[in-house]
Length: 227
Image 1 (cartoon, helix red, strand yellow):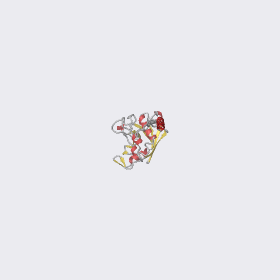
Image 2 (tube, rainbow, N blue to C red; image 1 turned 90 degrees about the horizontal axis):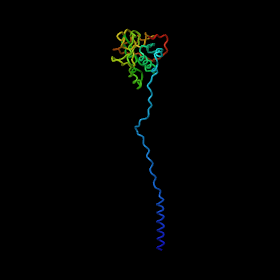
Image 3 (spheres, rainbow, N blue to C red; image 1 turned 30 degrees about the horizontal axis):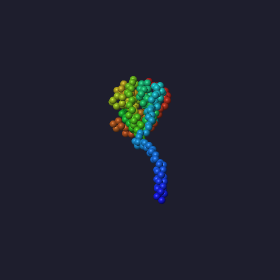
Image 4 (spheres, one colour; image 1 turned 45 degrees about the vertical axis):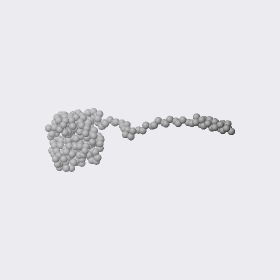
């Protein structure tokens, strides 16, 4: 009887040992997948900041004229890039990208000039891109074109090389500007519109009712005489 119990116990122990030996070892835990940073910057592709006339030559720019459709009538302008290349380039670019559309002649000096090109006078919301464009400065290009009636010239502060987008059209002589400011064009048609804008009521050079440029467009010149 005792031998029988001993055998049963021995057999049970062997079976337990076999079962223990067949136990599956736990597999190693898989490597944790890295969690992306919450503030990781997305990849951005930087495009060159170019405008339509950035690479235009003098001949190409000289063949272009500009027409303002204003609330007071049309004004047509020829340009002189051979005398003020970068000034004309800047002006044509502003027209081409539509920056001058809905701007006003926001400064008027009776008997002297009307001034336009203030991008902050546009109708509607001012965009970030246009705000940055309004700050782009161009070099002074004084030349031999006389500041006389009908001439288009670039406005700036008293500091040199501070011209941005503002321009003026003379209705009277401005000899004191010769050789200092960049004259770059002339009105070929529509001086009656310029005169009407200049004669409208103003308060300290600010028009009581500023005349708006509905659209500014570039056209091929017909009969213009660049100099």
